[in-house]
Image (cartoon, rainbow, N blue to C red; front, side, top):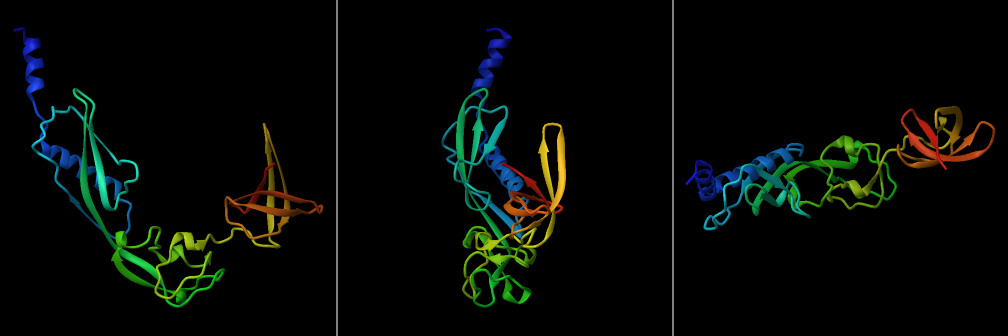
Length: 221
């Protein structure tokens, strides 16, 4: 038997250490959950150690479709060389953090002030998705729907604070290939950055554009 054949046979006999699969899944979850608010604790579940898998030169980790970095999670661990196999590792990611609840009944369109909410601490995976975790996410925003006292405040229940308001003097800009034209006008509505708003130019024409920082409205067709 040649040395190369013996090496190939030895590589084929090597089996993947299940502990390395678990470690790869845990490392992946730590990285993916690093930006979550509050205190994060990760518990990685077990895999079937009775299944023998060829040793992998490099493990690849990923979230299967529909998975997320907190709550009951699943991490895929994949090998593509020298063999092809995939293991799905169950895990639990708990996030204990402060979150905001309505301190009193809040009405549709109401601007949120400091006395309108209070702070609680809890496990975020047990709460609705998109719950607000910092006062800066709520103050000055307006409600997109009514909220009962004690209910968590969520991102989909608030509107972004407007960048421009009716009557505000704004810059106008038209961009083209190799040129840009600037002028001014008055906003005819409320709109946050990135949203469309109508503007009355100083000449009296009504145009429409996208709100940019400045505030500037970029005219679009």
